[in-house]
Amino acid sequence: MTRAAPEIRTFLCRSDNIGVLIRDPASGACAAIDVPEAGPVLAALDAEGWQLTDILVTHRHGDHIEGIPEVVERTGARVTVPEKARGAVPGAARTVKEGDTVTVGGLTAAVWETPGHCADHVTYYFADAGVVFSGDTLFTLGCGRVMEAEPETLWRSLSRFLDLPDATAIYSGHDYVLSNGRFALAADPDNADLKERVAEAERLATQGGFLIPSTIGQEKATNPFLRVGQPVLARSAGLEPGSDPAVVFTALRAWKNRF
Image (tube, rainbow, N blue to C red; front, side):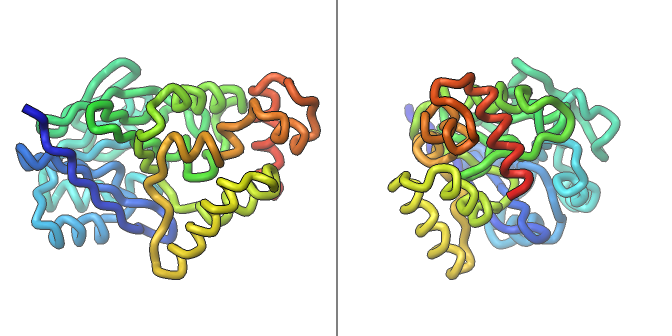
């Protein structure tokens, strides 16, 4: 018997954080991926008539966890946090590390440690559902800022996404799509797929929407940080085509920091 696909809702929190709820329709179990702000999460639950059972935290930064205490008080949801963020996230009931799994009703996610943006960052990959929650590691048309590691560490984390099926939906932790798109066009100006994606993002923005989720296939075609093996990206970074992808990534990330 084929399980029903999960129900997923996205909404803005704070100024540019993405709130996400994922629900297993068979059991009614429902998880929030991070809680950047309590109000929008609670409003989305009320609008859907869903009961929150779990909170899956990607990393300890305040803009991803500050709403947890209020939401837990209202819902009693169990809080799962990265083991390396133990003690830094309020209300943690469980810690997870590389190789662990988490369940939301009948939905199962593998836990990946994806450091680079910060040392404790994890990603939740629901393989059967074809969905990955990448937090601040991989964004639509971009990637996170390197904060607690060398750039090569974030590149290794990003590389893991390249092996996922192209149809895998990526839910990232922020809507930085328009600014990411401007940089991507500067680095990869003749990419027709990229131009189309940026135009789509601009159309959605005028309607109050955002280009999240994306898919791995779309990102491999348009995200400069996943395309560092392409000669055009090496040249844009001031390097020779065929340069080590990690070196190209490091140069592109440094350029983006100044862009």
